[in-house]
Length: 394
Image (cartoon, rainbow, N blue to C red):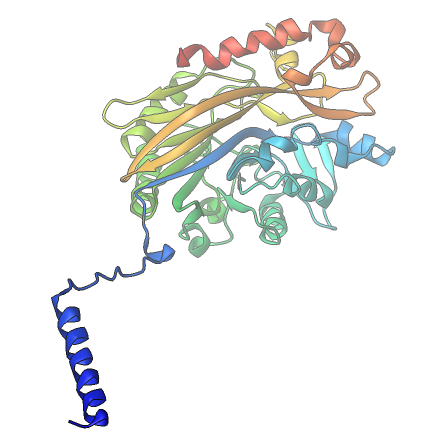
């Protein structure tokens, strides 16, 4: 056998040996790559902030004209809105246009455009426009307000341009949770003519101011249409009796009706004073805010009822800012980490400066320079409002 033949034989033997060795080893298992967008979770969570009425009045407009820095008004409360996913409030004044006269008293409110810009600067997501001041400037005022907010990222609910607009669902999605909104008011200061009535979310007959089957059926129908489209259904109600700390029987009955029709959260406004927060319902739980009071207001003497007038003039200066987490767990809505903060509408003793001040920052300087300090508006009075808000949460 030649040398070259021997070399060739060794090569063949080596190749056969490697082949046999390979065939006797187990096959390597290759795992399929997992891409992030294929991972799904059944648990989602979002943080919400609720505040009450954005009510801008004549003293504020006058102060701005005299040099007050309006952009300082929300400075101390902005931190709450920067630390949430969804902020909700009630726009209590019409946003006017160049052809409308500004007014902020005599229960007739039309604010200049800069007020809308100020509210939008808070990073709000949803505003109800259904309240007793909705029709203060008629249909033009409704459209002017909608025109302004259409140019922002804020979703409005409760007033509409036409039937198609009303039938368009108000849904805001945050962190994979779909929040749906409806809004209604007990009445308007100027009765809405029949031809415009469907453009305002009303829950009572405008002439009789009674809750009728017609309006209950309308609300139930709109809730039924929206409910399957969303994970969390929020109904905003402008209701109750002004200058009271307790919900009236109509609020209680309406809250029960909303719970039975699937509302997860009821947002309440109108009383200009805080009212209790509570969970209602058995099979289905609903978080109810009967009234968050005023978030923004600038009048020092407003209550019309002689009995306890000073009490409610003082209560007018305090609003509720409430934060909570909404968790969606396999389709079930869970509300947790509820925290209620009192916010003071500080009016300087000369009515030239205004500020919204969280109670924890309401120090002696703020207390003693408030225009109503000598009328009983002090920290003790403000602290007492915690009991009003939280008594049903114990």
